[in-house]
Length: 179
Image (cartoon, rainbow, N blue to C red):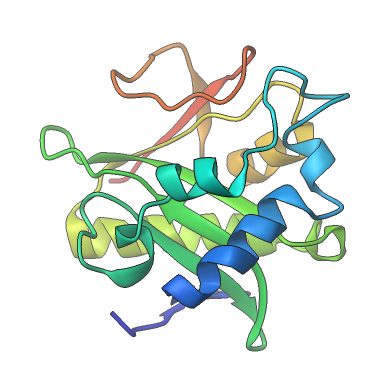
């Protein structure tokens, strides 16, 4: 899979195994990490080790061999990597999938890049894999992320998906249903 997915502000490039370590570093070692995981704000969500990350983000997230099980994309602006977005397993029963996203630095927040990446991935997955329902589950403490998800068309719900992958004690569930 070498196709790039073009959004209004960002381009999504399928991640490769060479992107795995930088993506891990963006998650665990950036100036944004403290706003997503680890003490003092998130003592309930420890920063993963490399081994834990590799166990969660298996090779198929980076090599296109099993796109229905999950896939990572590098978010780029003007050919510069600024973050990652991914989807998990696509349910054959209801066409749903869970998303996750993070940017590599605070210099990329509040510019609409995350929102555009989410919308771009939603549209791509709806077109290519007939995904109809998107789920994202941040901590209630992550107000900036929640605002970005709402700008991308997600709404809060009390419906808890069967296979929800929650990282927080206080997660909220947001969903977006495609027409």
